[in-house]
Image (cartoon, rainbow, N blue to C red; front, top):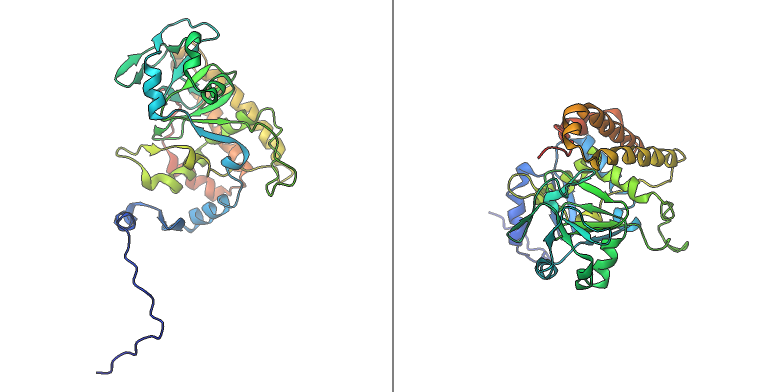
Length: 321
């Protein structure tokens, strides 16, 4: 038997890390494989693979907005000493929310009990006199407009704190408009930097079916038991955002801003029973209009829309307990 010649420069053997092997055992149910900072598409849909490739060429959320974690574990424990229940907080008090009290377009403060380090509150606040217990950075975050994103959920859930006054608890993320417009010499020209309604636009995009689908494709392999997604600043910063490169996009941006404002009004209604019983169809219609405008903004084809619609059913309105 002839022996194969030994190569002059053999490739050195490199052991496969356990984390990679663990990922490989999940290939049958995951559509992406990650190793050494790179990603490979493993799905059997060429159409989905093509769409993912296009989306990943777009600017990311982290390039056009500030995306940060809301609180560390240490901050969460320190805060526990100052939280109290108060159904009618003063304007200078901060209402506290966490992942369990965030739905798409709706902060469930006063409507759903908040569980916090073993305690339960229906109307949790940080009284104004204890605001000094927060770091200057957390004070700025709490008192300024922002989006608050739930950190553990089956579907991306993002709500707006329109005027400031909401304190986001541990395991949530905060998205804020950039403090100043990027330098004109920046490699990424951001036409949204000066948009006064940037948070409204991002509110619609982040709650859309397209971005939920993208997030599951990109990060669903790290889901917890029960299909709960891990949602944090590193994942959120990677979300693709369609800017204004095409002439029709500014118009679509405004459509989404207007629809987000309408959808937000349902979220802040005090008559939750009326919302559930009388106008769920109107809410569903608004969600469908938002999805359609997002599809147009991202230049999706009809087959791509159909695939996403099929894979994201059933959709939640964000109003169910």
